[in-house]
Image (cartoon, rainbow over all chains, first blue to last red; front, side, top):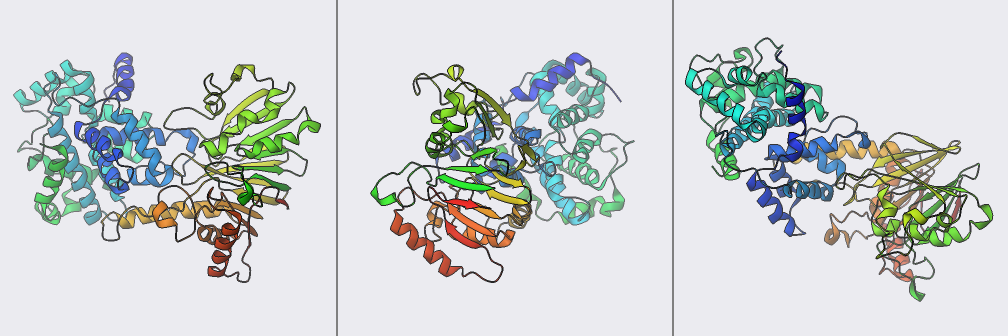
Length: 284
Length: 295
């Protein structure tokens, strides 16, 4: 596996501390929390739609002091365990860091990335509950879908020049973005995402899913099947933009689990609604 | 083991003729273990009266456990006399505050500021030690063990169970039973309910079989809907918790500052009528300043 230089590792390790959340969640959080009677579920909805907020909240919650029985992997869980007001104040402190700019110097469209992440999250959750009920926790599938490409957001924000180069190579040569990242940076976004997830003490199965979602040699798990298929479906149907365009020669994942690719899509029901819900939030 | 109440009021101290029977000080509970180790649960205004009784034992070590850092549970700490007397040790235990990113060591410092108090923390004469607890990890204190569990309040709140030679007491600090934030029609309802029940079961297991359960019973069931989410329980939720956990005795505390003695007795008796004591159910009583329970 590719390795990052120590310096880059350090840089990325502290990156997320300084990483601002998405503009619409920051605005919504400020708006909602101005009203002392805001609905708890509205607050949860905003937080769990923002990969940065979600990551940051889960990271602090899984710190050792709270001796939680198992790692917390959902925003709802964090509300039950730590209380709504604590989560609200955590969200406010994240909002205070500022907002992610829509455009960064890498040229990566962060709003369309958010739309891709949100739709992948929703589709992964649906696939999990329809094709892997039992082995896949729907909440885990959502989080894994939401965060599978988080490494790209970090690259765009903190290694913009290198990432721009990788995006260009991927586009010009018709190769997958993670391969271009390997070439330019020495590590792909999946590895970076998993490194961060490890640092924040995410459970191992989530770390592995983020790390291996592009690794053809990795032993597939039901969770990974769902996330990979969701990622492919969202790219093929052009829901948002992950920076990695769908290629016709791309191999479809896990046909055994989903019957066929079309069957998987058919099982999702109203795709329009998935996209419009996500769009409403991502404001694309 | 002995338990003595020095403060039973919630929110703000409420002295006066109409609270004289139950008392007006905010939360402070003294626990004496079998070998007379002093454990103090919360440092509300009641801790000042407690500290008046400690001179004859000095120099002494006090083990203070803070359930949470809202004012009514910490505002007596700067008046806890042992902190001013050389030779004493005051060990203060509490939770890690995830929002400020600080441990319990900030609990004195935030109060002992020039604008608000004449003595700086550096000028305290006793040895002050802080212990930020790992939730759920049993913590040895003298011949007792204190175990914490995270409860539900607008700030991190730890309930404490003190076990000593087979006897036990549990104090919730402030706690509101969990409720589902979704409507039954919402897709997320069932999953949230599962998490709530998992958490409830863990808390009941932590309280299981306790000799004395002392719990936040701020509201009546009638008052509760208007105060949902404020982080407090009702008389009825406390009684239900005591029954479910198989507690032997249940003590309702954290009385509302506006609930005068006669009213407190009236609403408490109404709760008892709604929740008649069955076979094996715990005895239920109200806390009052000076109440002493020998376990």
